[in-house]
Image 1 (cartoon, rainbow, N blue to C red):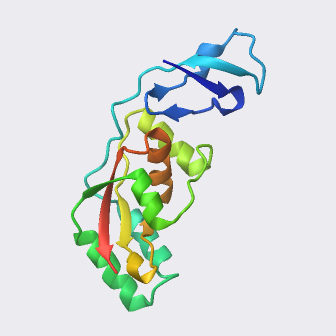
Image 2 (cartoon, rainbow, N blue to C red):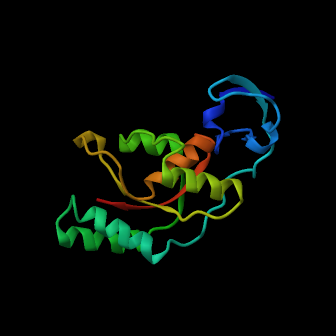
Length: 167
């Protein structure tokens, strides 16, 4: 399969079928911004997920949630997140439910997670607080927004491992 892309986006460009490798373009005579076709080479079958979240993830969730909830609610939500089972959701569904925009693939944290995916390194599960659209409350991404965006760039239908608390 071949894919048309612009040279400037080749630092780490992913798609469902694989990873474009800039080194393979050396000596091709292509110029910056010039359109070309590149061969897609294989990537891992899908992202690898850790079974546990790290302390720093819960600390980040606590810091974020403390901006939008009262302290007693934040503590209860973080306790609930720690006890929540791992679940899978697609990246596109998480973005739609959270009403958050997709971060660019070249955003620093997204780019770092895309590199982890391409190298087969595991990612931490995403921490979420369930929304209630009947009340106009979207899903809250307490920690892992950049991981959701990285997975979306890799494959919007790929599973994202999550822990979800009810608000």
